[in-house]
Image 1 (cartoon, rainbow, N blue to C red):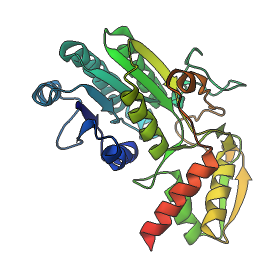
Image 2 (cartoon, helix red, strand yellow; image 1 turned 90 degrees about the horizontal axis):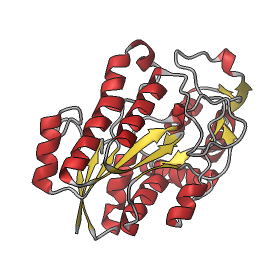
Image 3 (tube, rainbow, N blue to C red; image 1 turned 30 degrees about the vertical axis):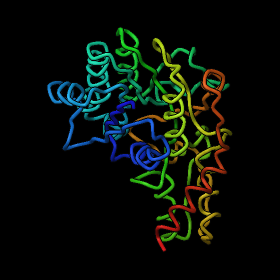
Image 4 (cartoon, one colour; image 1 turned 45 degrees about the vertical axis):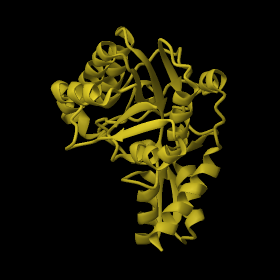
Length: 289
């Protein structure tokens, strides 16, 4: 029986890990979030890890207010940079494996082909920089760890693009969505399964970075169109350039991730983004009935 601590478990990924936990009887999964456990509190984290004899720690906790981070970098750095560094130190001290979730925002989005794990990061936002510093701290440690970069995460839980579009499509007759930012949505339930399958494989050794998103490529406009059409709404969706929707934090204009490494190393099969989005939409609509 492996003891797995999940931090930030009230978020999208944490909730989907909780949903899947019963399918992995070899794992004793311990789900924490504020106020039970603050991952910026070293004493609390070390006590929790020691008391539960943790074998794996999946760090889903993060500061994700991308635009707010531009004017308030301190909390972003504390949660996204300093906390992962501390968890890596504890991983060495207490001999557990760290699984840390990172982001496509570590890249500047100026690429012309899917980003590999070997591509040099160059974040354009405070949020992206804080996440990259967290990655660096883990890689510079002696911890047994994997970092999984993902993009455009959504689920049936919390606040996300899918739920926002569903709400706006009910409230408005027309929506404007940017068409010149391209990437791939990631269904949190698919990522959760990927993580647990990796842990089950018992193949983690050393430190590695992996990319994970669903298969395929789309723009935010394509993403929104599929959501609206699937919901049966009459709302019209119109494409606009990013310059007509300015944000405090710059978004990568291209952040498609190459998933070859994770598929090859662990035999992971990744669903197409439209198939997974359909599953999530059915789940959301069923819960609304």
